[in-house]
Structures are given as structure tokens and as C-alpha cells.
Amino acid sequence: MNRDAPTREAARAGMRGAVVIGAVCSLVLLLASTVLLVGTRPGDALADVESVQAVPDMRININTADAATLRILPGIGPSRAEAIIAHREQFGPWRKIDDLLAVSGIGPKTLAKLRPHVTIE
Image (cartoon, one colour):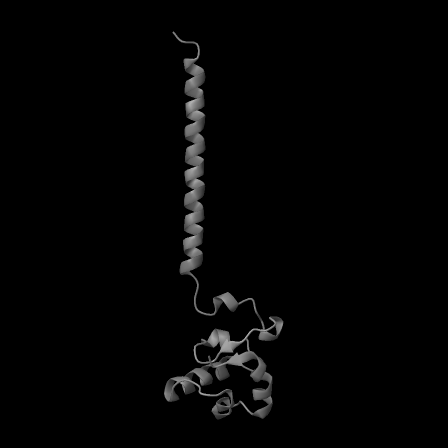
């Protein structure tokens, strides 16, 4: 009987255990990343951004932004965000930023706050 046989068998068992642990860890990471990707919605990437003022040089395209993204603009809450989208859906893409004045609740002061943070391109 070979004296090295039990040692080799123990080493093989240890390696199989390491492979199983590695496979389980990979599976857990895969599932976690899938949950993160599937669970995201438009605007979720900006969920931690309370205001565009917190992110220098950030501009939001008002022709493509969803309501969650529009809400981080200064002076834009849920109802104004929905009004911007409704206007866009009814009349088509915004042609100029000043056209936001057509949205109920957006006046010259709000427009002045929005201007540095929005784009139509």
C-alpha cells in the first residue's frame, strides 16, 4: 500500500472543496449583479443625486429624461416633471429651452434656475 495515497486523497478533497466554494461565490456574485441590473429603472442611476447643482457641469436632456431624472432639477417636483413629459408627448420634442414657459408652474424665475442645468440635445 502506498503511504502517499491518503495524503493525495486529502489534497484532492481539499481542492474539490475550494472549487465548490469558488463556484458558489461566483454564483452568488452573478445572482447579485443580475438582481441589481434587473431591478434598475430609468433614473435610478441618479437616485442618490438630490440636485443637479451637486454635480458640476451636469445637464439633463429634457427631450429624453424621465420623471425621476427631471425631479432633480431645481424647482421641479413630481407634478411639474409629469407636466414636462405630458407637454413633450403632446407637442413633440422641445425646440428651445424657453418653451418650458408653456408648462404650468414654470415661470421666468424657475426657467432662470433651470437654464444652466438643461439641454435639448
